[in-house]
Structure formats: C-alpha cells, structure tokens
Image (cartoon, rainbow, N blue to C red; front, side, top):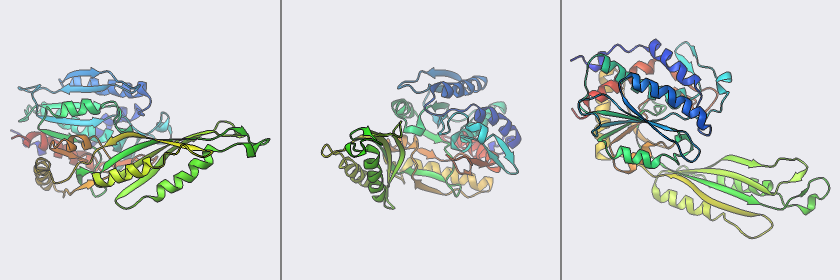
Length: 379
C-alpha cells in the first residue's frame, strides 16, 4: 500500500479548488448565503462517493451537511471530521479582500477560519480514495453553519454525532506557532439591554435619560474586570436612530473567556451582578450560549496528539500542543471526554480581519498530516 505521506498533493490544485469556496461568501447570519456554501460542499462530498444528508437549519440559521464516506463498514462509528462553513465576514467582503495569491501567501475571507482546513482534510480523503487506500476506520464528515456565534443551533447535533465515533478531527486553523489544540478555555456570552427615558435632544435634553451613556459607562467597567485568566470583551453595541433623540434603549453583547470552569463561574456571577432595575436607567443582563471547558491532558486526546507529533516528525515539522482560548466546536467534544484533536488545519495569520491569509506551504503539509491520521487512527 502506498505511504499516505507520498500521495500526490499539489498546492496549486488545492488553491484552485479553494477559490469557489472562498468566493461563495457565507456569513453566519445570512442563512441563504451559508446554504449556498453548503450546496458547494454537498456536491463535492457526493462526487467523492459519500452518502450525503442535508440537515435543515433552525433558529433562522443555515443547514448542516453530513456525509458518510465510502468504506466497507460505512456508517459505523470511526473518525468524525468536524468543521464549520460559516464566517464572520459579511457579504461583499470578497470585494475588499479578494481571493488572491501573493508569493507564498493566499488571502480571502474565511480562508484561514476555517474553509482552508476543511478543504485540505477533504482533499486528503480525495487522494486516499483515488489511490485505492481504505482507512482502518470509516470516516464521517459533519459541516455546520453557526460556530462563529457559539453554535446555538447545532450543538446537540454535533454532540449526538460525535458520541458515535472514536476520534474527532477539527481542522480549525493552527495556533500561531503552528501547533495543535488539545484543550480549550470556557467561553460565555451575555446579552445586555439598557433602558432609559427618551426626549428631544435639542429641545428637552435634560428630560431624557440616555441608555447609550449608561451602557458606555458599563462597557468600561466590564472590560476593566479582565485578567490574564478571565477576559471580558464588548463586541457588539447597538443603539439610536435619530441624532436629535435621547436614546432610551441600548443593546450590547459581551464575550468572556476563562481558563477554568471555576473562573468562568466567577465571571458569570460578576456579569449577572450588573442587572439593575433601579434608577433612571435600568440594565438587564441575560446569559447567551456557553462553551464548556475542555480540560487538557485527557488520555484519548493525548494518544491522538502523540500520533500526530510522530507523523509531523516524518513530514518534517514539529507539532506542539496546548490549551487555547477562542472557542470551537472542539469544546463540546472535548468536554464530553471524546478523543479530539483541534486546530490541525492550515497555518496563517489575521483571521477575522480584512487581512486574513494562509501560508501556502501549509496546504500540502497539513494534507499529508490528514492523510496519515486517517490511515493510522484505529490501525
């Protein structure tokens, strides 16, 4: 049998295949756009011989796609390739951040997080099938539409599917040093609403009570609670429509990251303490979606990581492993105690910005890692 490390991976071929993925923009909150991306992937999975299911979206979000890949024991639990196809970039970002290559770098919205990794791991399957190589364990692919907003609509689907499998591969982008993630910090989201008293800003300014001003003060207080082990960030702030009106309602969203569950619980308590029903301006704080702590050093995960390090050494690079912030759907599978290897996708920089890009040499590097993992897990 051919060594999976010797499969004919080609970076130029992968870039050509990635181009329509990146140019099919898929911001989370645009279900139709996400579903267009699911159409692209559904077709590719079918072309690979997969038995493909389209799982309708809910909560106003996009669909999911699940594919049982060809195998003598197809449908049995084995390896789950788990990824998301939504991005943080709104429609039209492709006009200011076009898919383009400059030397050894390639740019594009969602290329690093995480369409690049998803594509590479599918390309590894494509090359294995073309070479007639059957993996020891059957592979199932699950692509979801809502990871960038905390996975509110598909967590149950992910957990139910993951429990059927022995190993979970999550090709989120690699850590800054190129390393994998073997644990993740907890993430909590909060929705805040300040309510004041409206008035005409030019005629009766003193009669009003500005929800914007009150929320702005709370933003400073909230972000001042940040420590190295538990952070607080206000990422959404919405209010006002007419400049000549004192705004009576202001909404905001807060993200908190904590290294341990105990620290997260403390952070949640601090956030909930901002609830106030007294005074001229009230503040309501409600919990949003939460990602649980995925504790590092779990036996099954560490065995997978050890194998990945061994493979990386054969390819010619060193693979580190660590816990990380920036939650992913690996939080859920790791929290369940399922062997999970996360952030084994492409290397790059500046995800979630208008400079998002990948290092092209990581495409073949990670495809070889993927092919060898498919072939050695369960062997």
